[in-house]
Length: 136
Image (cartoon, rainbow, N blue to C red; front, side, top):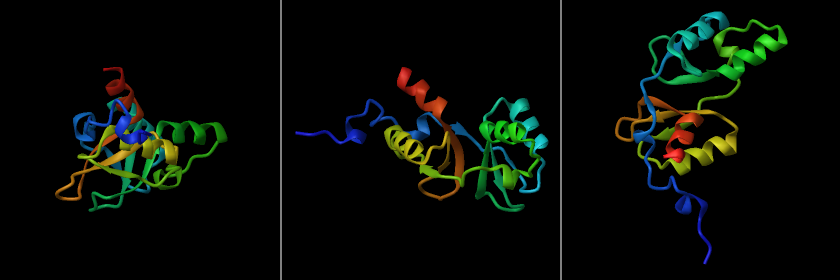
């Protein structure tokens, strides 16, 4: 009998909502990369959501690796153009195993966490959050 990786994972019964960081720090699409990097340093975070004014829905995620890539290339893009990936979402009710699978499949280190009832963003889950849960 074979086991499905998501159900046999040690994180299959741990919910995203139990491990995520509540709340999302965001910036407008025209924020400078310096402003985004300053937010990351000040709040000791690794990703900032890019949102249109008046909207809570992220249009992009700028990660610390996006900042490093821009610096290495000698570029100075705005936040929207620095965001290397479109935001991927996971429900707070999903398992960490499912979140880990999404991250692995798409090569991303952060997921936007959506409230299952309202569909609104409520937090962020990072690879470090999954590693911490895995470590126990």
